[in-house]
Length: 98
Image (spheres, rainbow, N blue to C red):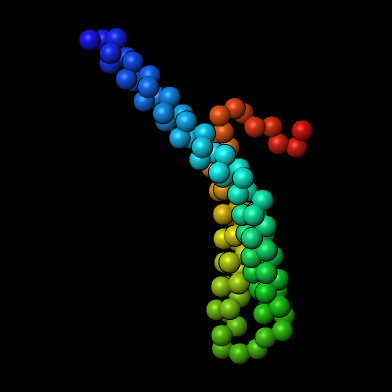
């Protein structure tokens, strides 16, 4: 009985590792696209905040600055979270900037 339970436990562990590997491969494949889109929105948000700060006058100025700055910082944070998830899912330790 103990060996049957051990077999199914090992089978479940192998299936989970396979699922994590597949998710890792998909995330790794989508990384350039995700980094490009998030980098573009971060750049746009931070440049937009600077443009609104320097060139706009009116009652909505502070709201627009907060929104643009939030989009920029949020996009940078999502890029960091995406890479953190990728590092966690990696089957082997990743070496960056070799």
